[in-house]
Figure 1: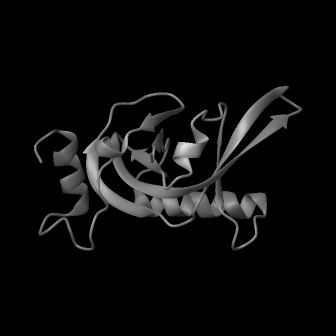
Figure 2: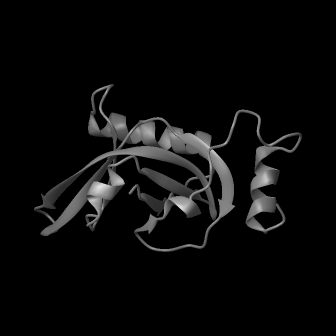
Length: 143
């Protein structure tokens, strides 16, 4: 069975900003051009096998699920300065836009069942409406 994760993208305004932030973090970490993107979190998911069977990390941007990244793996590590363990979630670099779906704030990450995950957004799928307007109407429950 496939399972997904959902996480808040704190301080991110939109998908273009998210791409910039992730790119800057990879440069700061001196990651190689082909390495996956890392997302740090305190707790390691216990259902890793289900997550790696085709799951994705869905991102909540300003109260709306806006995109996803395919999960690649998990690494546990230890921060000597803070004297605690943490988990590095590895995801593919490609951001896949999804149909906007409102989501309340939460801390950390949560599991997301496949039937609750929004479908991917097709190119030009917002019709005549600007993407920001569609996202706001979806957040308000009007779409």
